[in-house]
Length: 71
Image (tube, rainbow, N blue to C red; front, top):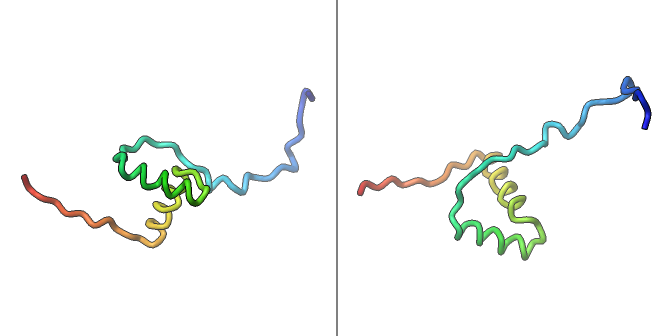
């Protein structure tokens, strides 16, 4: 291992903007199972599949259909 390295010719990471951030999110079991089954048939990890779906929704500016009911 060298004592010093020369980084003067280095360049910024071109993938820096594409980094992902880890978060905690509560998702019901039926939804997770749905994406796990899709993942099995597509060969894509289910978390990546969920991320792709959410990214597509955000790109198309889709809004979830929410209905509030009083008890």
